[in-house]
Structure formats: structure tokens, C-alpha cells
Image 1 (cartoon, rainbow, N blue to C red):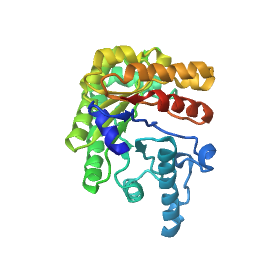
Image 2: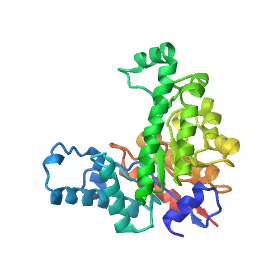
Image 3: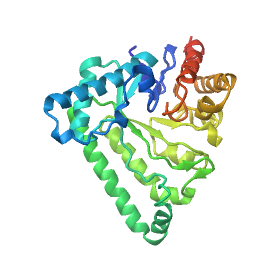
Image 4: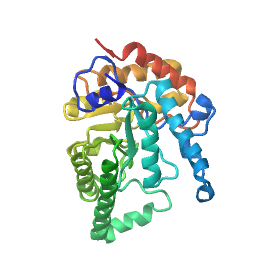
Length: 317
């Protein structure tokens, strides 16, 4: 099986042989790994002034960075971050990666239109909006879903894309930013419609959110994504408990503690990786990853450490 085929098998909770699939939502340490700035950290202020030849060089280098990351760290999937983030440039980047790799890797994009935790400058205003104009909030939520599905239909017709990672964060370490009742009114119906729309178009859907998801876990499962990421242990999310409650309904991704990778001991990092594998692997439907991403400032040697554990212990017999 190719990495893409194994990734899809895990998403569909089918039995696989060999190593558990692995990916990261983002791998930002491309400067340390390859001497190249990550595509998301580039600012193309003069893109409109570039000749097409210069644009093509930029596109090609971005595609190469994503591919080198997948090859070096044995990722089964590539999460593209188009820059500039326009539909045309997104399609060009998909085409470049497919041209260079064929069907070897599962290719996905960000595709969430649901409300996420507002930033600090907008949080109070957003809270008042929920209370004072709930019908307007819901109307806007519906429009966002419509727009996302319209773009997805164009991407489906273009071809080459396997699915979406829905990256709106809903939770702090202490719990959701909305109460479960509010979440069921302002997020869950729209998340469910978004996911079903993507599924109807033939896409796979991974729902990501950090934080303590346990108060809304049942609602997230009911929206029917193929997989749930990141199962954040820093917020008390235990993969063993999530596996027990819903492992028969969707694939689980993550749970290797990013906080420990940053500040813990080597022993703690190894134990976190082992724990995720021990409780995620049984019965299939698990993809190995950290509980967030490989973010700027993380020690690359610590990422290598969890990969050593994965290579040694993340194998189905």
C-alpha cells in the first residue's frame, strides 16, 4: 500500500499492515530541516508585479518543501498551505505536488468555515453578538458554509485533492469557548452540514480542535467527520477514554503531548508517544501525530525522538 492508501484505510478504520500512518498538521521547522523558509511564513507583497516565470519558481519551491517534509519524516499526507491563498494558486499547487509525486500522498487543505475562538480583541464583542443577535449569527454561519462548499465543488471538479482539515479551534484547556448548549445552536448544525457537503463531493474530512473537547465530544462525533485531531493531553484529553467512547465511529489522530516535547524530559516525551500508540492502535483507526503541530521554536531533535518510538513500536503485526 502507498502512504496515501494506508492513510485512507486508517481514516476508514480498516485493518492495515505495517506501520501506523503518520502526519503532522503543519511542519514549520523547514529552515532547520532544509534551510528553507516555510511557505506560510513568506510574504509575497509584490506577487502582482512578478513575471510568471518568477511566480513559477516560487510555486515550485513551495511544492518541493512540502514534498521533502513528507519524504524525510515519512508523512502519509501533505497539508498544503497555498501562498498566496487564492483558489487559482491553490489549484496550481495541488497540480505541482501531484505532478511530482503522483498518488503517493494524501493531499488536503484547510476548509473550516465554522466559528472558532475569537481573538482577545474580539471576544467580548462576539459574546454580545451571540446574546443580542442569535439569528444574525446563525445566518452568517450558514453563508460561510455555503461559500466553503462552493469552493469545494470547484476543487472537486479540478481534481487532485483528497480532503480537508477543519482547523477552527473551539476549546481552551478548561473547556469549550461556548457552553455545550450554545455550541449545539451556533456550531454543531453548521459543522455537520459542512462535513456532509464535503463527503457528498467525495472528500475525506478531518476535524481539528485543540483544548478540552470532552464536554462537546459527542456533538463532534455526531457531525460525522472521518477523523478527530488533536486529542490534546495538555487539556486532559485521554486517548484511551476517547477510543473507548467513540473509536468505533471515527479515526483518532494525535495525543502526543506538544508541551512535553517542548519542556519535558526525553523520558516523558517517549512515554507520551508510547501511550498514544498503545491506546490508539488497537483495532485500527489511528494516525500517529502530535497534539498540535511541529511549530516554530520546537526542538527538532524531540520530534526525531517521537519518530524513533513510532518506528520501533508503531507497527501492526
